[in-house]
View 1 (tube, rainbow, N blue to C red):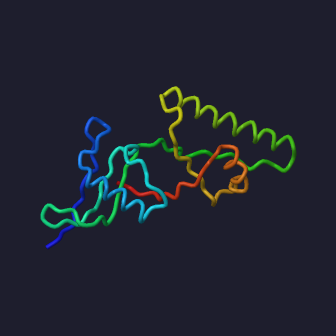
View 2: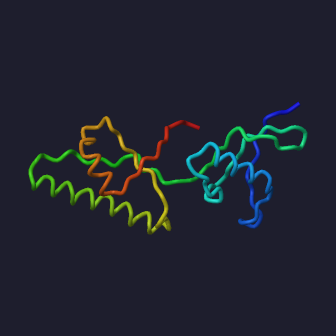
View 3: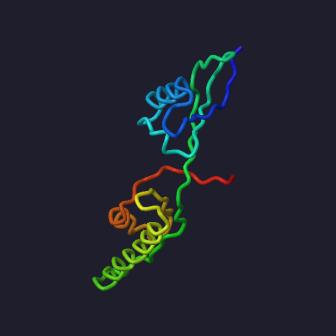
Length: 148
């Protein structure tokens, strides 16, 4: 009789796959179910939900990976009035705020790392969302919030 088990993807010495068969199943699952095969080493931890029978790995049913990432839950600029001076101040202000955050994170050793930036489409400032998205290099992250 088969059963579902949650099994971790592990590495020896940080590079050698501890269980090559499990890693193979992870790659097959990603190829068949995800838009691309991730580099599983980039994650703090990855688990596979695998159907097993005795000690045999039969089929992968799911995957979950964790990654520690800086979250920016608040980054808001008021919508500028529709005149050159206000728009220029808005532009300068977002540059000052975002650069301050970038410099701080780089000083903390996070240069080149991804961060999360909360974007609320319900805000009045959402009218400037397209502008900020382009200027800050924001990419959609398709995430939902949950409590642990």
